[in-house]
Structure formats: C-alpha cells, structure tokens
Amino acid sequence: MAPCSCNEQIKKLGQQVTVMRKEIKNLRQHLESAVRAHRKHMASLQCELEACRQEKHEMKKTAEKDPQQGAEFSLEKGHIQTVPIGYISSCFSKKNGTPRQPSVCMSSRASLQIQPSVFNNPDHALAGLEHYSHVWLIFLFHKNGHMSYKAKVKPPRLNGEKVGVYSTRSPHRPNAIGLSLAKLESITGDTLHLSGVDLIAGTPVLDIKPYIPDYDAPSTQTNMNVRYEQTEDTVDSETEAEPEGLQCLGDSSSELDSKMKFSASGSLSEHSDSVFSKVLAEVRDYLQQGELCVEILADRRPTKPEPESKSTSRLCYGADSYSSIAAWIRNPPVAKLSVRFTPTAEKELREFQPPESTDIGRPKFQFLKGPDEAAAAVRGILSADPRSVYRRTCCSDRLFYFSLDTADITCWFGDGFAELSLKTAKYKQQHTTLQCE
Image (cartoon, rainbow, N blue to C red; front, side):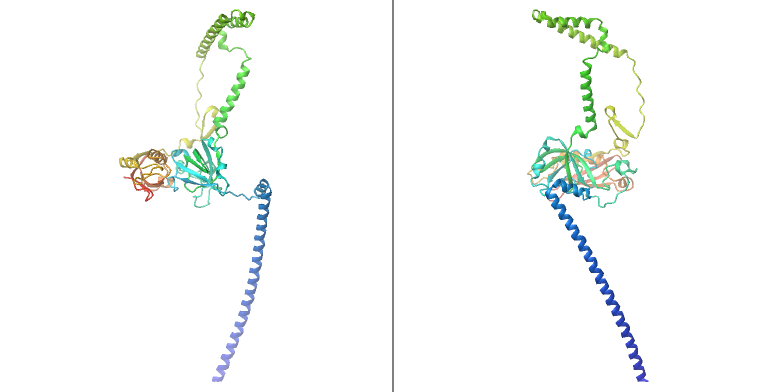
C-alpha cells in the first residue's frame, strides 16, 4: 500500500507543478504587456513634453525678436501670466482685524518695494509717480485658503443677507483679484510708502496705477462737462439781449449806450478824465439797480413745491445724480460701534514710540507714527465691527483678537461698543498685548 500512496502524491505534485508553471507563464505575459504599455505611455509623455518645450522656445524666441508680438501671441492663445511686481509690508500681519475697505482705517501704513526681477532699475519705473497723491493697487487675495467661490455671498455689513458676488467686493471670486486705493505718502528709491491701506503683509501686488480724479471720479467728469457748457453759454450770451430783470430800468440802458458812444468818439481826447469817471459811476449805478430788480423779481416768482422723494434701493448723490450705489453701503443693518479705551490702555499706549525712536527700553511701532495714529487705527477697525456674521450672530464668545503693527490686541464686544485695555512689552522681544478688562 505504501508504493501506491507515494505514486499518488508524486502525481499530485506533478499536477501542481504544471499549474504553477502555467500561472508563472501568465504572470510573465501580463508583466511583459504592462512593460510595453508603460513604455508606450512614457514615450507619449516625452513627446508632449518635447512639444511644450518647443512651443515655449518658439514663444521666447518670438518675444525676443518682437516683445509686443510675442505678448500678443501668448495672450491670443490664452497664455495669461501674472508676475507680482512686489509684496506689501503692512501693519496688518493677519486676516483677523484687517479692515475690509481702505476708508475704515485711514491711519494704517504700509510699504511696497518693487522687485528687482521685474525691472533692472525698479526706481526708474516709479519716475513721475511722486506727482500723484493716491494710487490704485491691483493685488491677489492670497489668503483665501481655497479657490472655491459661489454666485451669491453674504457681506458682513448685510448681516447674513445674500447678494450677487459681483455686486460686492468679496475676496472669494472666480479670479481672486483685488483693487485698493491707497494714499502715496512718499517714494524712496524703489519703495512706495503708503497709508490708508487694507492689505495684509505679504500680499502680492500685480500692478500700480495713479489715481486721476478727472478720469476715475464721475463727479469730476460731470463738473468738467458743466464747466465746458458754461464757457460756451457765456460766449453765446454776449450776443443775446438783456435779461428780463434788467428791463425794468426803462431807457437808462439807451442813455448809457449813447454816452458810451460819445466817449468813444473824437471828443474823448478833450474830456477823457471827466467822461470816464462819469461813465464808470453810471455803470456802477446801472448794475446795482439791475441786481436789485433781479432780486425783486426772484422774490415775486411763485415757488414750486419740491417733489416727494421716493424710496429706492439705490442712493443717488451729487449734481444730476451722476452715480448711484446700493442703499446698504451707506445705511447697512450693522450699526457702527463705539470704542472704549480703559484708563490703563490710554496710559500704556502713550509708552509706544515711533519707528525712528532709539529708546530700547520702551515699545515702538514698525509702521505707525505714534500712539495717536495707533489709537485712530484701533477705533477705525473696531467701530466697523471686524467680526464675521457667524461670530456676530451665532457665537457666544465675545472676545476678539487681532494684530496691529507690533501689538496683539484682545477686545471684548458688548451691546454697541468694544472695550479693550493694554499691556506693554519690550519691542522685538515679544508683541505688545492689548487685553480686555
């Protein structure tokens, strides 16, 4: 019986070996096919990469020959490239507490240095900009955190109400590009010193444009048109008849005309002094009487009742209502807050020194010019309620933290006010802390 069992085991082992050989053969075939597919895929990738390199080389070669033609060539194909010309150095280091608009905190300060990689001589690009008081800054919202966006957003000033993203200045947009108007304090070399900014430190700036009221402000454009029309009307009115109010003088105008003609005749040489004095006196009396008649006629004219103003969703302002804005911009549902400094905060805020101070034992600012400017910045930020809609309506924690220059600020929001206190620390060793009581 033993030899039979051995033969059966040998037969089974032989069958298993045969199956294993077939599996190994199949694995070899799959591996070979995978290697061939991988080589084919790598070859296609290399071809695509080589085509991209060739296209880039051609674009660069074309741009070197004709820079304008090269730019048009790339833009026509949708190759839009934006290179930051510089990065903002600001008194705001974090998103929390940064003003949402420049007008909220006019005492804030920042600087912008043009990158040497953009121009060989960056200061040459700023030549002539010192003649302007304000500049437009086109920048990127680099702190969005994600690139998602929605067609409708909830501006904090609307307290949760939704409006279209293009009717707001929300940073969450299809193209995260921002526009800010800043005051140009000075230019030193390749650096712009700005105030009234709402940008975080490190914000990439794409472009700088001068602010020109004649082109950028609708009120100025309307006033210019009015001045031109008035000039033309003045020239035309010289040939027209006298106003209605001056006709009450009767024949005095004809008498004056006859005397003026007489003064212009040959007898002028004989009695020039006496004639001129008499004519000037009569002209003065004539004009005074005319003004009096005009005032009398104006008083006698019936006054028309002013039409009642209709409530609209837009606010129109200025002469002829040359522009309009959404009503919630000037009348938002979120009221401004009063800002309270505790006595300790006011006292210790005076310990701060301007950036140029050499006193090592006292805290000093890096951007702000002194305690008064810092207090104005804090009031501007907190009075506009920098909290989000969620923190304002749903969060029970009323503490709020933000950074301003070299100070870390902690405040407490009450009903219609924000209160804070201050503890100073040595500059460059740790941030100064503003805390609530």
